[in-house]
Amino acid sequence: MDRREAVVRAMARERLITNEELPEDQAATVALRPRSFDDYIGQQEVVRPLRIALEAARQRGEPLEHVLLHGPPGLGKTTLAHIIRHYMGVEVIATSGPALKRPGDLMGLLTNLKEGDVFFIDEIHRLDPAVEEYLYPAMEDFIVDFVVDKGANARMLNFKLRRFTLVGATTMAGLLTAPLRDRFGLVYRMNYYTPDELRAVILRSAKLLRIEIGEDAAAEIARRSRGTPRIANRLLRRVRDYAQVEAGGVITREVADAALRLEGIDNAGLDNLDRALLRTIIDVYQGGPVGIEALAATLNESQSTLVEVVEPYLLQIGFLARTPGGRKATLAAYQHLHVPTSGQAGQPNLGL
Image 1 (spheres, one colour):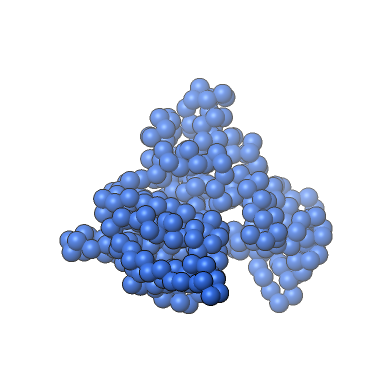
Image 2 (image 1 turned 120 degrees about the vertical axis):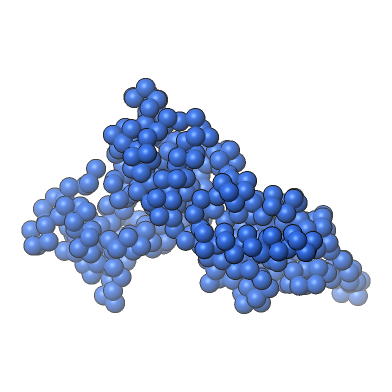
């Protein structure tokens, strides 16, 4: 990981509404993770064809074809890998692209796979090219030729692998090399969840965590969760804490609203940094367009943080527009911040 990417990821993890996994999420994720398709909510355009492929493979007594899952973080790619494992009655060996630094690291995992096992590689787009070269024959022919020593002492060892299913997950499918992508038989894109799907996720999680919550409270949390189950479950835990101390442990819509306002999350799922970017465009640059360099300097944030951490959601919900001249705040952003559009903006209401 280069320094810029490290800085961006560190900044993302400082935000409550980041879709990156936080340390506090890890234990909760294991407890709440569905084990079957019956418990899995949403992503029906992925689940239905994947379930058919799994059942066909099981009836034939064969491992499932290699699967590539791509889309934004926090949408359930790892969960689907574990569901595949349970469906086929096999084990899962999990790793990540950055963890496989040398071909030997990959070989150690491949040679320990049993027949039909699921080999899960998260962030597969970050595989080292030398490691990726060894993965091609492993995926295609379940054979790896491993070179030992160098120069005159070099010799090649041929390893025959047991048939396995590689499940690759990536947030940046465009960074995958064509040879790697072509070796996946099943390729699915994960999409953001609707508020109704997130409400169902929250109600299921609340039941497992023994949290008393109303339907309208779950809907309130859902619409602030930025289309991401990971964020929805994180906000649910924060609201639970607030309700435990301030409301006798019962989560109503009013309690959920108060808890999330306390955390700085407004009714569109925006936090302080989101609003600061929009306010800067509106108040300092008269709504734009303004270049990203000027925005970064005004906000005292790095350009990469704004482009990769802050802007994606604002673009997705239509609060921000990218034009040839720079960034512009849209009418929806003005309306959300209760800012007049006549040019006499004044101080916007923050929507909290």
